[in-house]
Each structure stands twice: as C-alpha cells, then as structure tokens.
Amino acid sequence: MTEEKFYTLREERANYLTHGFGFLMSTVGTMLLLSRAMTAGDNRALLGYALFGFGMITCMGTSTAYHYVQESQRKAKLRHLDHASIYLLIAASYSPFTLILLRDEPFLGWFIFALVWLIALAGIIISFRPLKRNSHLKTASYVLMGLIVLIAFKPLTEIARAKDVIDVVIWLIAGGVFYIVGAVIYASAKREFVHALFHLFVLLGLASHIYAAYLIPL
Image (cartoon, helix red, strand yellow):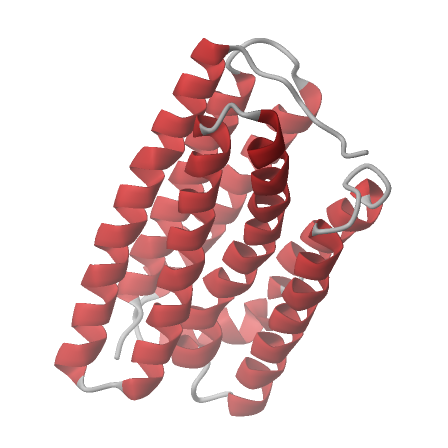
C-alpha cells in the first residue's frame, strides 16, 4: 500500500495550476539559460544549465500531471514519479553552481556534483518502493542533499566575492530559505489549500535559483 494524501477538487485545481505555472516558468528559464551559454560558447555552462532545466521541467511537469489526474490507479503511479522527480530537481539545482561557479575548484565541484547525483539516483529507486515504508529514509535523503551545499559554501562565497557576483550566493540562500519555509508549511499544516501554498514557496525557491544561475559569470 502507498501512503496517499487526498485533496478536494478545488485544492487539486490550485495544486496543478501553481505547478503548471512552474512548468512554464521552468521552460522559459531554461531557454534563457541555454541561450546565454550558447551565446558565450561555454560548453560547461551549457551542460550545467541543461541539467538544471531538465530537472526543473521534469519536476514541475510531473507534479502538474499528478495533481491534474484524478483516476486512482494513474494517480498512484504519478505519485511515485512525483516523489522521484524531487530528487531529480534537487540534484539538478546543484549543477550550474558545481559545474560553472566552481570550475576553478574542479575537484570540489565534481565531487559535489557526483555525490548529489548518486544520492538522487538512490532516492529515485526508493521512490518506486512503497512510500510509507520508506518515508523516513526519503525525508532524511532530502535533508542530506540540501545540506551538502554547506561543504562548498565557503569556496562558493569566496569565488563569488572575487568575481564580484555575491548576489549569486544571496539568491542561492534565498531559494533555500523559500524551500525550507515551504517544507515546514507542508509538514506542519493540514488546512485546505496548504499544499498549494507549499507550491508557491517552491516556485519562489525555484525562481530564486534560476536567477542565481543566470547571474553566474561565464
């Protein structure tokens, strides 16, 4: 059996509309980032931005589909995909910063890049197991992936200061704060439309990270 949460039809409408907007925002953001990398002729940036875009679009698209579909069997399958895509988004969000901003720290950049993607792969596999049985493991892995950024926080800040782009770090932190606030709301409140409110904070976090990625000097 899977652990399922039930939402009213009007809640689900708000849920799929919010992340439907996120899907559009992710698509536009990805096009802007890829255009910037191609204009600069920077293949490393192209890879980092492409992975970020893939993660964003997949996560937002999967979430939108999950909340839109009401037929129980299809919805149950999409729920697993929805949870798996969260791992994909977290790992993808690291990619522009580890591959582009940390290019002068290649060992650290590639180490963190490989680590978050390995955890994401394990998390994606876990997501297709019974959800309730693995809920604590999934939660721990989300937290672990988010905390990995602390390993690189000092060099990220030093590089950003040296390149006069400290705003990259500021928006990176802002995005993390939005995600954390959203997670707290999701976990602690059970009122109607709370999930849509959680989605709004996800969108704020996502927009912050898109902007931070755009500010990275190429």
